[in-house]
Image (cartoon, rainbow, N blue to C red; front, top):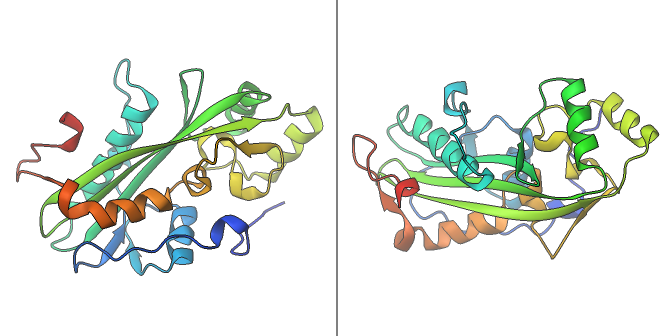
Amino acid sequence: MTMKFRSDLPLMQGLPLASLPTEEPMILASGSPRRAQLLSAAGYEFSVQPASDEAECGMCSRETAPELVARYAYRKAADIATKNDCGLVVAADTVASCYGQILGKPHDIEHAEAMLRQLSGRRHDVFTGICVWSIVEQRCVVDVVRTELQMEPLSETMLRDYLDSMLWEGKAGAFGYQDGNDWLEILENGSESNVVGLPMERLADLFERFDSIATRIAADGGNSPLSR
């Protein structure tokens, strides 16, 4: 069974659209179809240039989920910035976190099952790091958005049906909110688009405030906003 990301889902409607802070064309530094579909649904025009695999590897000792996604988003944007002379790069990275344990993308179906069993019946967080980088201005901003969810207890049938669907592939925490799962609830008016992988409300805010909050990046990559 396969299910495509549907454009008629409520979370795809009424997404915020902000003017770009520079005249550069937008570049999405991700191969995620979900992020591309969110940007398209909001009305943005952009090209897609996935960052290299090396930009998303390694976990520092004692690194928290927010620190991890911020670092990965920055590295993805930096990777694309080195390959282009012009562009407003948008990069993001998403993980789930349950009681401090970081849950990224599952390696295989057994890994996905272990993640879902861990999340079953529990509250957990989804964190997305987002980086907006102007190549021409050599300035960028990094931010992290947290959304809290509740997963209802999964029966063996529910678990097996979802695993068999293969919809867990490539998704942090081995689940997709956009898959129409009624066993997931977003708490406290959290961002749905953040759970999908790109917090559209925060992206629009970063575009609007870019001139006043972006950090200038030195030619050698110094003065990263992550060091502030």
